Image (cartoon, rainbow, N blue to C red; front, side, top):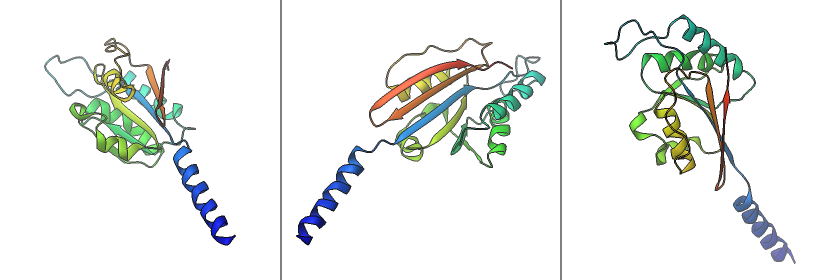
Length: 166
């Protein structure tokens, strides 16, 4: 009887482990408004409105338990991510937009809640890679308010876009 009970407990534990849902949530945003006074500057900083928006993103994410904050290495994305990362006592993890949602990123973020800061072309592309389909087009160059939310639960993937104005 003890052997049967032991086998039952082991089988039930394995079954539970296989069927348990592990949600991963990705919040993806484009950097805030950048300085546009020098067309030759490929790495501008945020302008005043952008700095204010970056602070507002931190307020927006205040009640969301983030496990990590990712950003490209550009000034504008790092400056957008900084207030949120600091408010959560997290380091900003730099990522290469040419290698988005690779196998390492998938493993590192599985079951976590993640903020990713990118650009008008990389943010929707990143969302599409997570979803495994081309659902979203590049963002309008004046769109700094879109928040993409992608949830991965086992093999089910959902997404939505919200506008978060200043």
